[in-house]
Amino acid sequence: MADFMIRFFLCNVFICGIIGILLIARRIFKNSLSGRMQYNLWFLLLLLLAVPFIPFRLIGFPQIFSWLGSLRTSPASHTGTAMGEATGTSPARNADWMNDFTISVNSKAPPIVGYILFGIWIAGILAMIILVIKSSLRLRNLKKSALPLQNREVRRLYHHCLEEMGIHRDIPVYSTVFLKSPIIAGFLKPCIYLPIHLISDYTLSCSTRSERACITGYPNGCNESDMRYMLLHELQHYRHHDAFGSFLMNLAGVVYWFNPLVWYALKEMRNDREIACDTSVLKMLEEDDYEDYGNTLINFAEKVSLTPFPFAAGLGGNMKQMKRRIINIASYEKPTFIKRLKGIMAFVLTAVLLSGFAPFISTYAAEVSYYQWDFSSENVSCIDLSTYFGEYEGSFVLYDLENDTWSIHDKEHATLRTAPNSTWKIYDALFGLEEGVITPENSFLAWNGENYPFEAWNADQTLQSAMNSSVNWYFQTVDEQLGASFVYNYIQEIGYGNENISGDLSTYWMESSLKISPIEQGELLTRLQNNSFGFAPENINAVKDAICLSSSAAGTFYGKTGTGRVDGQDVNGWFIGFVETADNTYFFATNISADSDAAGGSATEITMSILSEMNIWKEQSVQAPHS
Image 1 (cartoon, one colour):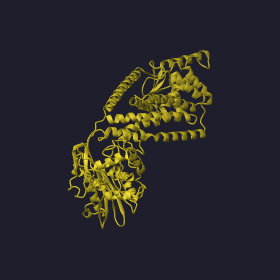
Image 2 (cartoon, one colour):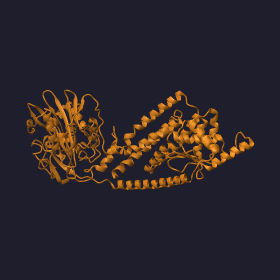
Image 3 (tube, one colour):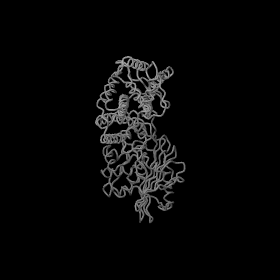
C-alpha cells in the first residue's frame, strides 16, 4: 500500500493537468455543447478518476513512473551486493556448456514517506465518511419527519407533470419544514421533498387569485407556473438518474479529499447538472415561457439554497450559481440539427483527448508495464507449452525468419516487461565496441584485484571470457567508460524495452529499472542478426562470436542466460538466442518467474527441450563453446 500511495500521489499531478484540459475544452466548446453535454463531460473525468484503481495496459508509459519504481524496488541502487549469497548454476543443470553465474541483490522496503502518505489518506477518507454519514443521518431524519403531500392542487399539478414528461412510475412526494428548496433523493426508491413554505405560498397565491381574480398571482407567493417549473426540474433529475451521478460525485470527493482541483471540478459538475436540468425543462416549454422559468429562479433565489444532503439533487444553489443559470436561460435557443452535430463532434473530440491520458494515471501500470503487440496478425500463432514449464510462470517466443512467423506460449507473459539481467550484456558489449571502449581485436580488460564470489571473475577478461562467465565487473567497467548519457542514447537508438536506466549505473539491469519483454528480446535479436542497427559489421560479428555456444554441421547456436536473484532466491530466469541453419534462422526467448529456483539454467533446459521437440536443435548436438 505504501508503494501504491507514492504512485497514486504522482497520478494526482497528472489528474490536475487533465482537469485543466477539461476546463479549457469546456470553455472552447461552450457554444457548441448543449447544457446536457457539458454536464456529461464531467463523467469522463469521473471515469479517469477510477483509472488509478484499475489494472491497465499501456502504450508508451512515461519514464517518470519507471524512475519512481526504481526508487522503490531497485535493490542494487540502494544496497550493496550480497556477496555471500552469490551462486552459480551447477554444471549438471546446464549440461556443462555454459556458466550462469549471478549475484544476489537485496529487496528494499518501500520508503517511509509512502506509509505516512497512506496513513494521512486513509485518515482523510475516514473523516470524509463520517461527514457523509452525518449528512445521510440528517437526510434520514428529514425523511422520517416528512409527511405525504396533502395539498390537492399541488398533487393534481404533480400528476400532470408526470404525464407531461411521460413518466409512468409513481414517485412519492412529501412536504417538510426542514428544507428551503425542493430536492429529489433516493436511487432505488426516489422521493421528492417540497418545502412547506412553498406549498403554503402556493395555497395563499391560489386563494388570493380566487378572491381578487388576479391573473398574475400573489406577488410574493408561488403561482401554478412556478410550482410546475419546480416539479419539472426535479423530475428531470429523476429522468437523467442524477441520484446516481450524485453518488459518484460524493465517492470521488471522499477518495480525492486532498485534491483541491478535484473538489473544484466536482463543484462545477454540480453546477452544470442544474444547468443541464434547466435546459431539459426549457426544451419542454414554449419560447414565451423561458422568461417565466427564469423569473421563477429570480423570485425564489433567496428562498432556495444548495442542498446540504449527499446523494440528493435539487433546484437550489448559491447566488453565483443562480446567476449562471439565469444567463443560460436568457440565452437559450432550441438547438438546430447543425448545432447538435457540432456538439456531438466536440464531445467525441474531448472524450478521445481525455481518454488518451488514461495510461498516465494508472498506478498498476506504474508497477508493471506491458509491451503492446498485435497478436491478431496472421503470422502469429499461440501454442501451449505448459507441460515444459511445470510450476514456473513464463513464456517461450520463437520467430521463424524464413517463413516470417511467430510462435508464442503465454502471450500475457510474453509481453510482460521484466529485468533482463545478464541477457543485457549482449547489447552492452555492442555499445562498448561501437564507442571503442573495447575492439574486436582487443577486448582485454584487466582485473582490478577485488575478490569476487566466482573464481572465473577473479582474473583478467576478454569479451569472450566475460560473456561465457557472465562477469559483471567487465560490463560495469564498459559502462563506466561509456558514461550514462551514451548508454541511454544507445538504448533509445535500438529501442531496448522500457529504455529506463535510472537505477544505479552499475546495476540498472539487475532487477532494477531496465525492463524488457520476451517478444522484444526476440525482435531485438532479429535486428542484431540483420544489423538493422546500422552498427559496424565487425562489431556485430564480435558480439555474435561472444555468445556462440556451439557450431557444427547442423548449424550454429547462439545464446545468453540471465538470472535475477533477490534476497538469495532466483526469481527471474532468461535464456535468449538464435539458431542459424543452412536454410533458416530461428530466434527464441524464454523467461520464467517464481518465488525461487527460477534461474537462467532452468530457462535453458526448458528452451532446449522445446527446440528439440520442434526439430530445430537437438540437445545432443550442443558442443563446448569456442574459447
